[in-house]
Length: 155
Image 1 (cartoon, rainbow, N blue to C red):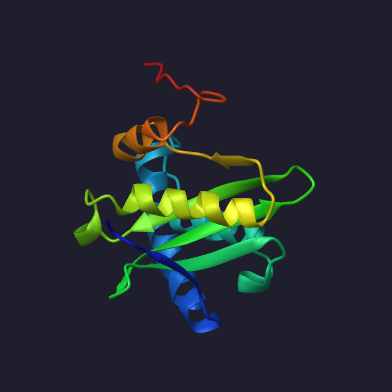
Image 2: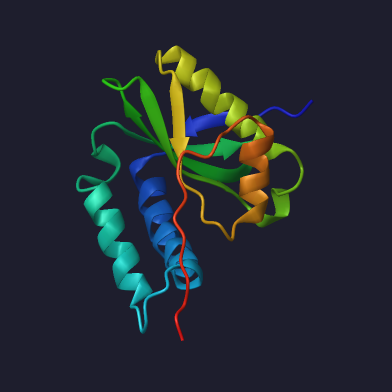
C-alpha cells in the first residue's frame, strides 16, 4: 500500500505554490468561465488575493506538500471552519506523472484523518463540471452533489 505524508509548506514553498496556483487557476477559468474577453490571469490573481489577504498566514488556511516518502508529488490547500465543524478543500493537486496511481484517493483519506484530529465533521469542495477525473474520484469516495451551476450559450 502506498503511503503519503502531508508536510506543511514553508513560506518560500508557499510563494512558489501561489505563483503556480495563479497560472493553474487562470487556465481553469479560461476553460470554464464563460465571460467574453475575460482577463483570466487578473481574475485568478484577484480572487486568490481576496481569499488569502495575508498569504500563508491567512487565518484558518493550511497549505501542505503531498509527499510519497521519496519526493513531493503535489500540494494541498484546505480551510478550517471550527464554528461550522467543517473544512473546505480549495485544492488537491497531484503532479501529472503521479496521477492515476491512487495518490488522490490516499490524499483524501489523509485529509479525513486531519479533519478527525481537528474535530471537523464535513468536507466541502467545488469542482468544475468539465473536471471529470476529479468528479469521479469525489463521487467514488462518497461526496454528494450539494448544488449545480448551469450555463447555456444563447445564439
